Image (cartoon, rainbow, N blue to C red):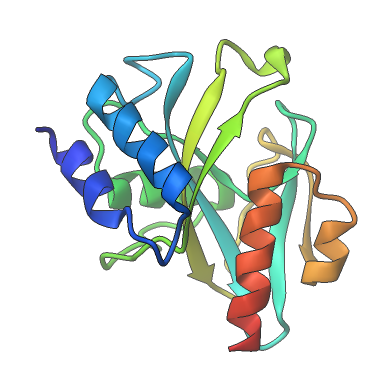
Length: 179
């Protein structure tokens, strides 16, 4: 069993996913080849939702490849652990180094069918979602990734987000802001 497989198995809990998604995650793990490097069509990804608890806003980008408003994130590369991916993606997309210093726990697991074939051969993403507390003052957003970026309330975000997995993340964030 690989380190990544062990990590993913350890986060599949009823608190962050449904029984049907958990079963599909476990089935996908049994197939092996978890990364885009190993399986172009179906692989695991890490997404993160920057948020400001004081303003109750989240940070989204109008992603160039997908054409959708999404939270930042990306594919897991072969040999990476979850915190490696999270740190790399935060750096690549927001220009912040070592934001994921400690072991963070995900808040949601989703499965996203990829419909926009302009993006490439991806057909299915197994998404692992993290919350990143920030005020955004240290962001240096990569203009190659996004047409535009915005801080939005959950209600504002729902007006522009159409991706089902991102909408699930917004629902979880709304509950989080209420707590």
